[in-house]
Length: 330
Ligand code: SF4
Ligand SMILES: [Zn+2]
Image (cartoon, rainbow, N blue to C red; front, side, top):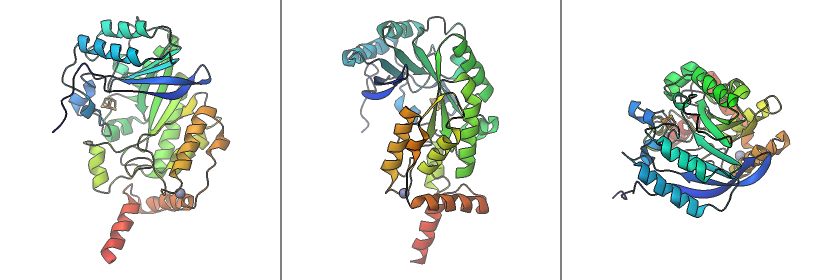
């Protein structure tokens, strides 16, 4: 039986490291329970499993109780990230008076980060937002057709550009998320799309976080994945994106892949996954492309995989097809 979740209980809270003011610092991550992303009611994005994390309704009182729980765990970390599985600036999800309490509680923090869809980023909604805020924007791809058909994002890249520019004009920081390898793309198309999208986002971003697609439960992408029509990207592809971008954009490049090394997440051969993910983590802090140098025999397999995809003209999971073929022949 599914555990009954209280609307006044934090979803999760943990500590990690991130950057602030050019230094590596401790960060507290707070995941709030809210009513969830408004876009889920329109079907949501094809890769997003956040509907699982949202409740029907969470009152202002419930959210303030969650703030108290977060404060009880707060040990003065310079960076606090507040995630809601939706948009912190959506009044229906987080009422303005609750937002004000959060800003007040973490006023002395060097940096606060939250996420928002662009439609909630307006001159009015930014009025009470303090200068220590970074807004994370889920651009995913700068290709309007990819956003519309493959991601089903419900806004355009231009909407994100306008929102990002407004945030910068207000003196706030912007972290832009890109999705590496949305569905229906080959590995090579995914790399090209992420590189192009980063160049699009660079003028209005301080940081660009590349998120390789991680297959989440109950999503459209999971259905494709189960049918062998999607393979999560190779870690080599993520490394390739950073190698192509390094030194050519102003924004800090970063990635902290969820599900890295697992079949549902970004992965290589299994033997080198940890090393490759560590290299990416290191690069996310140092920005030194030399930190991306990793060796493994499967690098050739990745190249051959991309070549096969090109010849066959398919983004299907070729590894899995090959395994199935071998099974049938056995
Ligand atoms: S990816 Fe973001 S915008 Fe899309 S459904 Fe999930 S929370 Fe909403
Ligand atoms: Zn390997």
